[in-house]
Length: 391
Image (cartoon, rainbow, N blue to C red; front, side):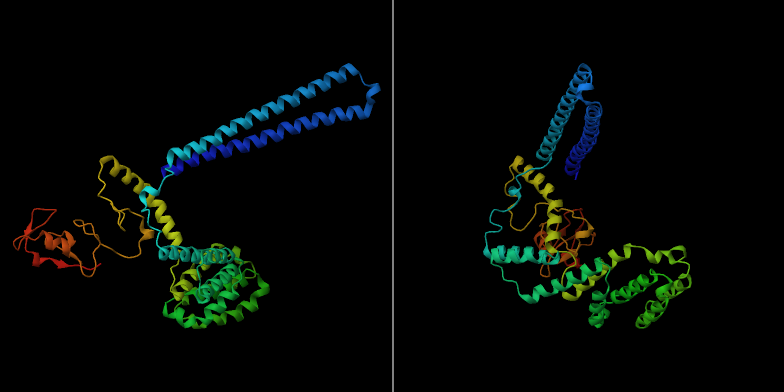
């Protein structure tokens, strides 16, 4: 991230100079225009014959001189900006390694099957983003055939999300009512929150919507047991409708961030019903790669300097563990610190008496004459005393 910060600082300098250059250029050019307009006005008012030619000549010469100086000054400062722009390029070259193929196996995309998976992942990402035309063009050029059954859910999701961004709740409410039982099976509160937001939009309309709001409150009846407190707050706000909700203790109901929140809730629950991840797999992979790439480049350089070519073979493994943050935690895994392999059902993690954990394969390899000495502490123990643990 420090590399990004360095480049960002150089960009901020360039942008600042561009802004200052624009302001200064406008000021100087406005001054010149006013000066020329004044001279023109004098010529029109007095005429060339009545004017003192010597004075007029001096005035014109001074005006031409000012124009020339201004043009030279602007050209010089524009040249300085070019120098600042070139510094951005140098900062990028200095902080980023343009050659990243060293940390990727050359044959990673050679297989037609893997190329197909990559194209399908990109197409799915484009469908998620609502870029349907781009996705169709990619399918035609790459030869990927996407079943309409896969495409249709994304079309519907994008249609509903676009309506929510326009603060139109009707498509989302229709979808929620249609899928009510499946949403209840997920313990989802999406339908209630959509009705709640529609009720708040009626409150926002003022006293003229009071009757309609009271009638719409009937939609809360199926949710009374689970959302009693929220319903009480909504009904209590009606007392202040005449004087304006924004001037009442219920003004928090009008917060605008509720629309962004309802979009996120709808996306999460709709993806859960469709068996899809909330975030695009391509976005997650790209973000993870951005965090991991600098570390991989550094470890690759160290390996080459120390001539340890056998440490990293690119065979679906990393030479070190890379922390991608809690946001990228999807399931718990345990990598054996001895064999550097992830545990599995056939090779589960085993807890020794001393508290250290290794894989079963490592335990078997370290066992000697029916005894096991922990690789991390000097405690000697019986291998059969080790207990399998579950994450």
